[in-house]
Image 1 (tube, rainbow, N blue to C red):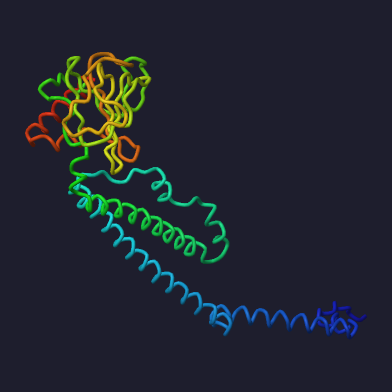
Image 2: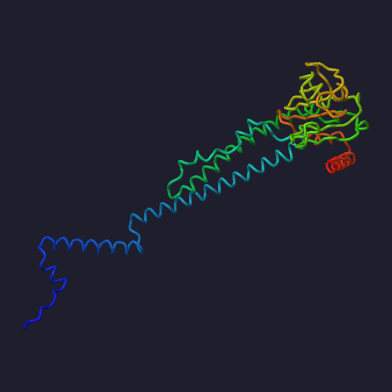
Length: 316
């Protein structure tokens, strides 16, 4: 008897129609070509890939150079800001800019502005570059406004020296205590925490109150909370307020000089005792009046005041 052996795969293929065999040969050839291309491209760049890689390396180098230039500009700007804030302004005795409009212009853009740069291989480089450039542009704007302001004050330094609030608003020998400091505090009457925008100088009712710099009286009337209030406009962005007065000796529109008596200490308005509420405002933002007292004090007297304030903080 004969033995039936199963046919090989090759024998089966040979029995396929000629068209199928041709399709199989084409499919095998394509698989071999794709595999060879994948193997070659893993180790050897094609001309197109080599060009893309060269372009990517060029972009990376250019972004690195751009970031170095941005960093150098940022350092120069920081040096300018440092000199303005810590050299020029202290020499003139003025505060840094606190104008809300300027500060808003100086703040960074929100994230939505940079959404357009996302979604590609270099999105992090592009986004970071634009963020730093925008921040640098706004910082330059802020610095230019600040320097213009400083230059104006330097140009009019003689006039400025007479108007800046630079003396105590009352006779220090009449001062009982600095009863409340600038900053957050618990309101003595209402019991809620709120910002105290000046300092309270406890003194006997009737103690003379002095204008702390040459100015024009902007307001002299009763105001809720302040009681009898005098507000002086000194120019150059500075204003001062004198609250809880028992008497007022000036009217709106009057010109006053530093050291002139403009009123008397009292207990009017929301007040828990006889004292002067004194504020210094720069560009309509309050600043700590304590920083201006040392312009009319010896170093020893200033140290003594600081010790008194520290004791007051401990007691409160």
